[in-house]
Length: 344
Image 1 (cartoon, rainbow, N blue to C red):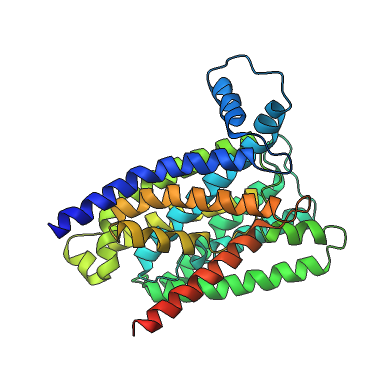
Image 2 (tube, rainbow, N blue to C red; image 1 turned 90 degrees about the horizontal axis):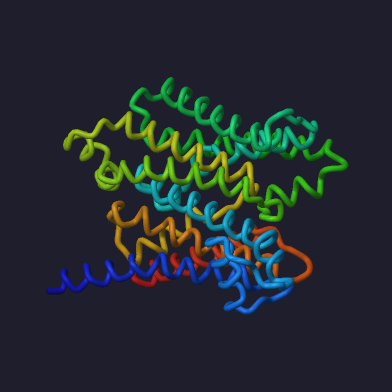
């Protein structure tokens, strides 16, 4: 009876996540330096979806041209970073793992900073040099780390990957700091970008994020059974017939693509892939068939709220969104550590 009751609660929670995400999205679009009533916001969005005539109101350009693309990008980036973190925690059996553990985020940041400092542009490509170099460096970082890990340990153990990821992140961070030293004119924009920003969001960015999140998210969800086995041990995964090396490569590549796209669009946003999976795991449990889709909605809601705080708390001044997520993440893990110690 207890098991049935627990399963029912989890099922209800899974149904509530999409509803919560829609509500958070409406609030995030409505609230800002110029607040718009929720009913007006919903009407503008409804008319835009069904191509109905819009009311003669200043709310229309604010909602459709300014806030909607930004909120969509925040939701999709939050979803992508969260599902990446949940997958990495299951794969590496490390509760403090997320998509940045393998050093991909550091590589993507390095590529973007190189493009900004040296003014690299790619004619004919709508996303420009920053986005292209960030994605390319993210993939190159993964190749370098996995190649070195294979040379050191042909079994590609998780400890080797994590250690190399941490070392590579420290290396890229030092190179980025060196580049910033010589970037006199771009220091402010680079620093703000490295702490995360949604200010340059567009519908084109949202489309790219949607394609990446859907394709890579489906790949990760397809590995749910294998991730459940990994969460116990790699030996357990092998014993039930899981191709351990293939699953590792699949998950790491999908996570790398997601992080590369996210960093290219919004800069480095920390703690999303750490905090959200922990919160969602408390609600729906550790089964990845439930955890991964739930983290998509949980991460989207979390980052939309973080973006809302970043642009309203000191309005008209805007905080880097990474500052907000890091602050919340630090408090969350401090509380988690305190309660864990209290339980003995």
